[in-house]
Length: 639
Image (cartoon, rainbow, N blue to C red; front, side, top):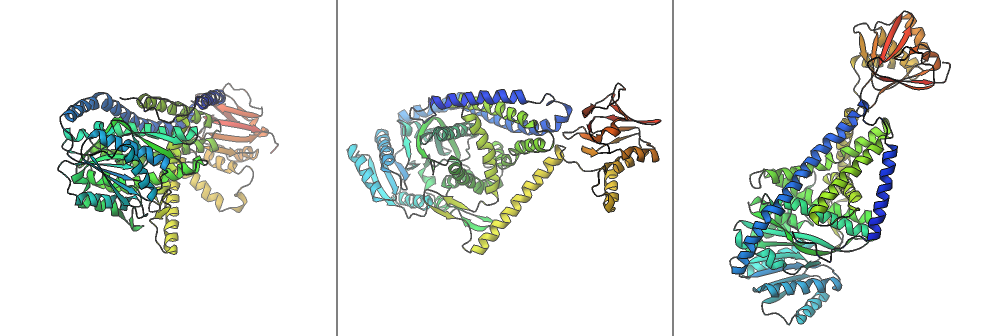
């Protein structure tokens, strides 16, 4: 695997050192504040929910990583050797380059076209560059570049001015123009953005694969970023490319990809000029039960990918060929807002296309690729389980659990960072928090967009689409999206509340007592209202022991009077063993009747644990009730 290009933007050493110091300080705090009984039986629901989902997600991610290593270290070197040998014998008869630029600064356009012309000149085959531009200044830049290279004989430049309604129409116009030129058999097309810098040897090292694979419809390359922005922005982009490299390498092992990146991809011209291909690029749309028929604004790389996937063509990822993108957030000073805008557009493109690709079934793409598409839809929900469980347990069970969850995040994301760094060829400590940001906030955005994926916006072009032109209809669609989103989140939250023990479904006895008390206004919420509940359980002699519900039961001295009037028939009470323990809250007067496991009186204020096998005892004259797996909290008071 080749090394990263020298122009890759990375964080400074000062930032990395600061991140290291903050990370170590955080680790010390987490270890110091970690509860001593964090691994007690009461924590099992917490660890099951976090651990089970984590095992599923990380086992799938580890499978992707192993496949990626196998492709890069075993499979691809053989493909590379075969392609290089074929390149020395023959090359494509004709090459077309589609380069789209929209309001890109001359400081970027000049090096982009300079590198492109150099590459095409070195490649040596007859080439037509279609420059899809938006301004006359772009023509001046390209003319300057061609003058610098003395107008190479094998290059022809064609200018096509965009309509300003998005990239799709510009691409379709160029593809039709290429079709009218009647390309030579075996001709190839390179589709790239106007802010992509080609590294030396890009064409030679990428296009040769078409010579050795007759069933190869398209390919794409590795990416790196030349970023204008702060250190966090630089590492955010490089982390995304590192994650992309891992997934792309894994998918390439199956001969399919999940996207043909618009930054740089190569196609067979006979496929790219097919009438259906051009129509899909220009007018791709979806028919949705709630949104109706709406046209896609961005995501042309998903449309080209879907056409090839549907028609059974193979795709390839080249891990050792890099193209560099000139990257900049829409607003450099607002990292959160700008990354939100970008991810919302990317995830919208993914969600608008993945559903119909899943409906194709495994046959045209293979089981692994098909399941990867399904997993994209599942992961946006499963990723949220860990944070939601951690919040529930922290709020309703034990606040110190947040330290255990933070330690889990620090460990797992550090491990992920090391694996990504091993494959990417570089390491950054900023990746640890950025991975968590991408995963959790990205999952939140995906779930948000999944109920509103008709709403589209392209920040650079300043255009939006997808919603009805009638404002009332648009508002109805938005309200329905809010309702459906809230319903799905509510169901998920309800399931997690039950599964973690924060709230449990009451048994028949509890429901009977609840029904009885709700009919009596006197017992709505009086002090010691649980006296009646507990007395009913103890007096019900149909079983020797009773399972109490989780949470606190507030008692007062009146319990003794009730039990003297109604002697207990049940001689054992078992507390809840889940994340939310049973706690008997009582005054000192009632505590005088309690004994610990060694038979000693419990008369001190505070909390007493009653654990198996001995537990505690509640002495009521000649009767003794054993209390197991619960807490006793003695509070001051005479009642």
